[in-house]
Length: 242
Image 1 (cartoon, rainbow, N blue to C red):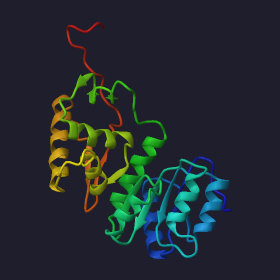
Image 2: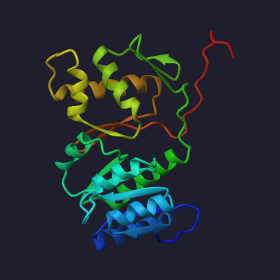
Image 3: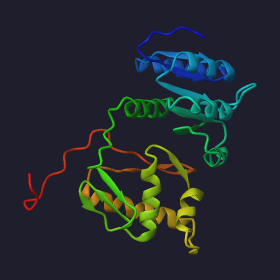
Image 4: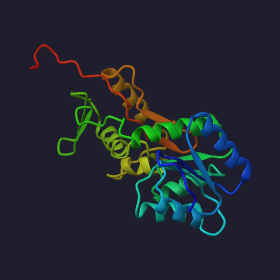
């Protein structure tokens, strides 16, 4: 085990020295302490002995690969994990495997994009993300979603898709996973229907919350729901008690 200061650190598990050094340099610019390991088994021991604030984990590692490491970590820790993969076509496989990672980034990547993902996950894990029930409430019995106290006028298929996205904020859902929710009653639904429903969901949420774009596109993969970091209070209408 390598020693680190007790105020938190980002563990980078990457066997390519150039990529590891690049990530470490950018983490330093973000004023985040980091530790680099190039071995999956060593990473598991480190997480167990001294929990990091976040793990950036490469899929292709010698010996114990990133998928096995991620699953093993999830058996004892909920530490945020970002997985790095060398192929965009591998993302669907990773999503289908339910590895337990919180986010996925495909190489070659923009270091700034990785840092943005790191900061977003750190904010969420540190409790600065407000997920109070007043923000959104899913009513399965009535098949409706209330957003900031307002009921969204959703179709059945929109409800199914939004319910899935809301169930795991920050998680990327592939197109095939989203299509499965639309095919639940064996309707004939095309791939393009996913984009259409996402567009409608964005429009309906923004009708209530104009400055908030809650559904992010993940190029070549699918979509994820990003909950707001600091939602503004919901104004009461004149008919509502204070």
